[in-house]
Length: 256
Image 1 (cartoon, rainbow, N blue to C red):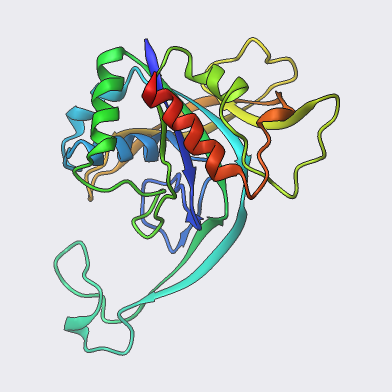
Image 2 (image 1 turned 60 degrees about the vertical axis):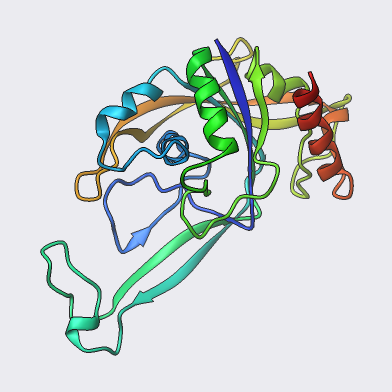
C-alpha cells in the first residue's frame, strides 16, 4: 500500500453531495469521495456511463485535512431565458423547457484542503500517471472551478496520512486560533477512526459513487470521523512563503 497527497485549492470549489439535479445545488463543506473518484476517472479517460470501471477505486481510502474551510457563496444562475422555446434548455425527453431554468449554486470561496489517498501500489501509480497527463482536466467539483498549482504534492508516500500530520505545509487561515504550546489545531476527516480519535465525532455522507451516468447517477452512504489534530507550528506557512514551501515539498519528493 502507498499513496498520493493532493492539495485542492482555488478561487472556488463546489462538492455536491446530491446525485440529482435540483434547483438549489448545495455543496458539502469538504471534498466528497464521489468528486475525488470522478477526478481520477476523468484523468484516466473513463466515460461517465462506464459504471463497472468504478470498482477499480473501491480500495482507496481518503483522509482530508481542512487547511481553510472557505466562505460559502451562492450564485443565482439562469439559463435560456427570453428565447423562443426551441432555443431554451433541453429536457431529458428531447424537448425544450420553454422558459428560463433558475438555479442557486453554492460554492466555497478561498478554501484549501489537503487529501491523503491510500491504496494498492498499482492503483496509486496509475492515478498519479493520469493526473500528470490527464485525459480530461481535473476540477474542484465543477468544471468552472479550476485548481491552483501544485495539485499533486506527493505520488508515492508510504504513509500519506502521516504526511498530512507531520510534513505538508499548512495554508494560513485568518480565522484559525493562534498557535498554543507549539501546535496548531486543524480539522481532519477520516474514513476509519484514527489512533488519535479521542473525542472524535462521526457523520454520515451520501457520496460513494455507484454510477456517474448522466441519467442514472447513484450513490451510497459512508461514515466519516472528524477530529481536531494538533500539528507542529513549523508547518504553518506565511502567506508570502506558502507557495515556495509547497514547491520545495513537492520537488523534494520528486528528487527522492
